[in-house]
Image 1 (cartoon, rainbow, N blue to C red):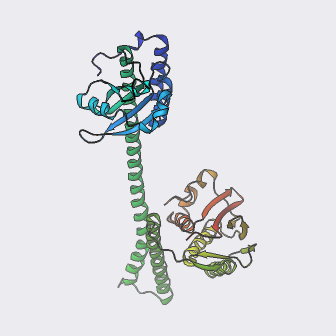
Image 2: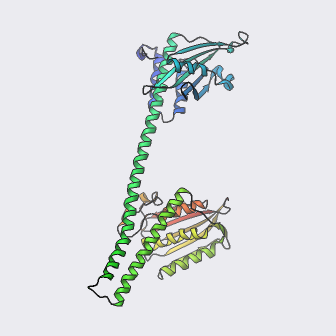
Image 3: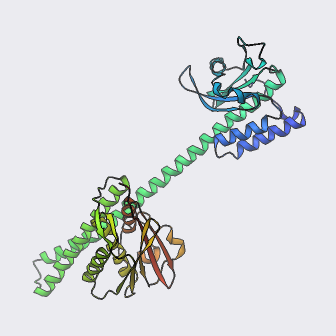
Length: 406
């Protein structure tokens, strides 16, 4: 096909301009179909055809149409875009340009039933990948100079696929690299978070077991309390890891049932106060008697996490929980009036294992809580977002559907 490559410098000015425009279209292509659409528009003024069909190789002797466009007289024959398949197969088998002339019983009464097809084998990376077929209804036949120009177009279509495969390969390699980094980060984070409570448990248990020292009851109780707290923390971490994996895989079961929102939110406040007596929480309800279909246990997990985060990251700052109605939704916000979060971190808050760098060293955490919150809220058909102003505080917005689809 390409024994004597076309020299663009020998082309007439209009064809030369089209040739370079096609080259640029291939170079900047981000989508094969849209690039082929552009190639047709660029080629049609200098190379007449009615149908263009791109076939990709299936089996050893089969082809599959991957792209087809009917223009000009071809528009009246759109239902017959499979025309040219035999030409494509022959071009693939022979690895040469194929020209076919076909007449139907209605010719010459209807000139459009005289069909000329030009088949060009396409090579990419030294392998045959398919064939490009141009069809003319009613003539004229393809002349040698037109065939040479068509070969150039075919070569650029093949380059388009090479470019697309390269882009896909680069994207695949980048995805693999990111996955490897995530796996490394996951192992490092989990190892650190597991070792931290285990270190406390092991250290204090070993200390209590020492036979060369005696401990008074107060010290023993203090050590045992630390062991108990770290065991709870380890249990919570494992639960969070399991929940995050199940939520990400969509395998965590939800048990939906009717729930009065005002009662639920008051219960959440009581639970928070039982954990921290000094917490300052206010409730602003604008949805009296509102009922929702939710999983109470999982939704409680969301609010427990948001309220405990507010206590950890905005200590001694007041907290406001508010609810209101929006068309089709109930809107619940949890606001603290603490130091706030820098804007560059807001988009990452709900990512698995992400922690705001300024807090990571001073406050213990896994970076799983908000990820789990988002997955649970989404499992309810809702959404959770965050907004924050440095020095003024952070607000989490939860929107749940009034009529959740089953």
